[in-house]
Each structure stands twice: as C-alpha cells, then as structure tokens.
Image (cartoon, rainbow, N blue to C red; front, side):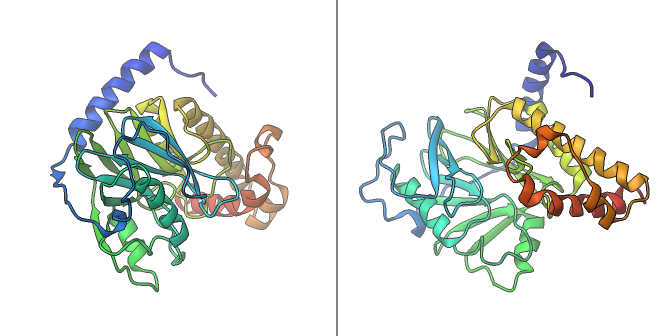
Length: 320
C-alpha cells in the first residue's frame, strides 16, 4: 500500500475540507426551543461544563473535549454498546448516538442533567439496524429525534411504532444551540444505509459513530463495503484531532487511517476468494488475515459474521 501523504499537504487539505464542509452544509439552522421533558430532572445541575461532576450513571465515561462538548465513551461491561456525544449550547443541548436502549438513554440523560439544567432539544440518531426494535425507541416523551431519511425508513419498518417526534433530512442540516454549531451530514451507505456524521467546527470535533472502530474489527452486518471505504476516506480528509468513534477512545485521523488499512486488507482478502470462485462456505472455512489483525477486539466473535456480509455485498455489487 502507498505511504501517507505529506503532512503539509494533509494540513492544507484539512482546512479546505473543513471550509467546504461548513459552506456546503451550512443549511438554515433549526430554531431553539425552551421546553423538553427529557431533561427537567436536573434541579441540582450546573451550567458550567468545566466543573468536576460526580458520576451518576454506569454506562458511559464522560470526557470533555471542548467548552460544552463531551464524548460519552461506552464503559466496558456496561449496558452501552457504542459511544455517544452531547453538546451543551447557550439555549439547549444536542445529543447523538445509536443502539440506545432505555437504560442507556436514561444514563446518558442523567450524565447530561448532572452538567446542565438546559433541555435536550434534539437527539441525533446516527443510524439504526433494521430488526432491532428494542433500541432507539424509548426516548423521553416530547423528545425530538433527528435522523437521515434512510434511518427513518429503517425505524418505520420495525414492528414497534415510534412515539416521539421524528425529524429526518436528506443531505445535511445545521443546528445552532447557541454559541456553537452542530453540522449533520448524511453520508448515505456505509456502516448502514444512512449514516450521519456530526461535526462541531468550533471545537474541531467529529462524531463518526459506527463508521469508525478503534482497535476493533467492528460490526459489518449491515455494511455497504465500497461505500464504507469512501466514508472512511472522507473522515480521513477532514483530519480532525478529535474524532469520537463508535467503539474505542477519542481518536484522531491516524486511527481513521489505521481502521481504513484494516478494512482494505480485509476486503482485499475477501475479493481474492471471490475471484478464485470460492463459495461462501469455503471462504468461511479457509479465510485468513495477518496475525496483527487477529489481536483486534471482537475478532473471534465478529469475523465470520463480517466475512459473510462482505462476501455477499462484494459478490453482488463489485464482482457481478
């Protein structure tokens, strides 16, 4: 594989990408709202996000990234299966995540309420896996949930009916919660069929959700392989120093590059089996990756599931 581009060139690309990102996606902001029942229990909360806060929940480790911008990193062994984000603006709070069961929602909102009495005006559902109706439905009454139109179709296809207000968009949307900008981009196909990336330009923070895994093979069961690679290239070009993955610690563009390299090597190995005419059964039985990848988190549990999805997706969309 070729080496990484010259750092000076990457810096120029980064700033140009960020500028274009803001100009193209700076759509009309959604007006703030003063009421939300999901965050009214914070009678003892503080509005200064810099103060030390005693943990009031077990699902997340809360990490401040900038003034009012927080990563919620899923705690090992907890109910949370993926990371989240929340942004405390002057007027209201914006939160984001996926795979949100009721206990996890309660814990995330408790962490927010411990830091501010402001309402969670919008929750950004970054994606939803069809068939998982026990997550992404149990938000507090009155909560507005933002998502891509593809994710809305996935949610609407479930046996459960969403009881909170769902707002969906096509390409992008910008929120202005006061003193900070939250830019949403519908990446389209990637980890699912409608992934949303969240960008906070003032803090140079990106929330990639499950488009990015750090030190893990990740879950690819709903993935669109070639589109996912393009999404990773997009994240790499942004070049932020603080990117919140779906799994793992707050990271940087170096971790995007590392996951991209694993992903490319994985797909190359799958394509070699397909080109030889190996069946899925043969591929599952004989598939091998370099030893360094076998040390990644989730390898034993997820590699065959990921392999099955990649084989089927590449056979249908690349090798036909």
